[in-house]
Length: 226
Image (cartoon, rainbow, N blue to C red; front, side, top):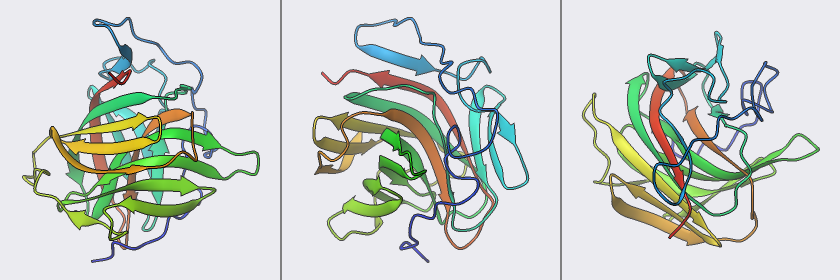
């Protein structure tokens, strides 16, 4: 089991800006908040809500049957999709479900995404895996550092539901210098960092030694921190 693969920028990473596709970033359908504090929400019922729509042999990032699919067919690659927002402090929630491929994977949320003029990427990430592990940290200029757990590597969490059809709700808090992850309502880790202050949100999935990971995402809600 390989939990130490470095972040690998490559073709197929960074959907919307890093991938040469006809992405629709910047054309986001902002929601009409149904309650105070909601900045954005999407149940993927409309394919015009601003996320990338691409199906290929190596990468798929697309609306499928009222959900959003990220599929990564190559080993050692992370792929993300973004709606094209510019936000500072958020509580970002999404429902996730494993669909296919190796359970030794990583998927989750990112916030404060920046794409530098040199083509490098920076963001905070909040990962879980389909075999019950989690990690959160940052990527700065394509260099990944796990900042929680304290061991600096993926660690197991009993908060992750492992049944094949299970839905796991992930909640990432990016508020000031505080970055935190809750899984199905249970806090699992947090760290403090102020290197990134503002940027896009995103959904992300990745592979380690084996490709073929497919993850479904649904019911994105982005709120202002209370």
